[in-house]
Length: 381
Ligand SMILES: Cc1cc2nc3c(=O)[nH]c(=O)nc-3n(C[C@H](O)[C@H](O)[C@H](O)COP(=O)(O)OP(=O)(O)OC[C@H]3O[C@@H](n4cnc5c(N)ncnc54)[C@H](O)[C@@H]3O)c2cc1C
Image 1: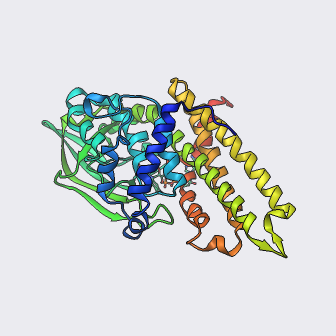
Image 2: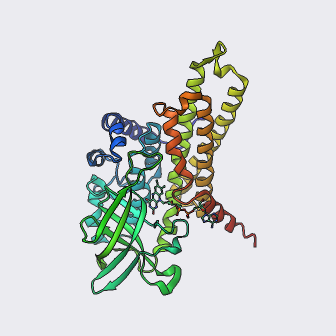
Image 3: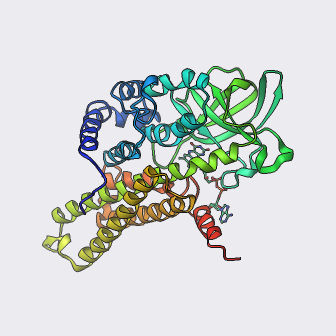
């Protein structure tokens, strides 16, 4: 299917991002997978070349263009190359809007230049050992003391958790106010009492640092409150649709890449004296998968347009997230089957795609939670 989403300037951007990946990521990614984390140098290089903070104003070193198509290109090309260690999508797609929309001028001056140059790597910490889907169960607590908030608690599964220089932490600031009693606090690298736990050993995304974080009497200056006190959940709800669309963008790109590599494989591999692509079963499976890939592509591209036009609803994003990621997981499983035993070998890209894909239906809100969001909007009771 020919995509109609992009203009010539996006194609140029894609070309230069591909070059960046070839030069600065491809030679190192296997080593980063071994070490469980990417080198910070790749962030600095990405910043230098304009791949961080495309939406940030130019005065802070950003690209000055609020156009999610650039974000989509970074995510798509990273997925196509299987460079799953790069946390750029989290930085650009998830964190940037929080800083752009909620930071005051003084905070912008402190954080945005580093955000765009790659000197400040970012993370967001919602999930805790005892609660993920049910964010109202968050126990991390911040109590006001003079000009500081005193923060205590633990977070887990935090993307960029080891490399992060600033972490947006969701904390309870007024337990009596229920959902209106949570706020966002920006914790900085060297604040006493802020510690990183394990870099977690995951099934896939091997080069991405996903960590446990702990906060013991961390004194966070009141000047690091992001947005309004008590409005933490409102801020999350405003920003989660873009995060979820970003995951759907990755799902669509992974489906296309896996379909392509499988078509190539079944053309080359022979059984019973002929290419396995000539068996009717193979043709039917791939016909189904090609159809589903096209359907996901159409939906995702349309929702990118909607996001750019300020029209992507919470329910739309939930639809895109659960459906595209479930289709991705199913497609990769079926493509792996067509690879036979080779599909089970880690040296084959389909095996890596399989391991990297599994988390897609879980993070950013599980499939079940997405269906709850959509179901609620249908006003069934
Ligand atoms: C690699 C990775 C990276 C991550 N990165 C981040 C990050 O950067 N920041 C961050 O804050 N978090 C992050 N997460 C956490 C992720 O968002 C959570 O794991 C996810 O939201 C699910 O929460 P949970 O693990 O506590 O599962 P649970 O909430 O315990 O859910 C377990 C199961 O119960 C189901 N379930 C729960 N509630 C309901 C319900 N009401 N109805 C039906 N079924 C339900 C779920 O769908 C799921 O199948 C990451 C996770 C992973 C694995």
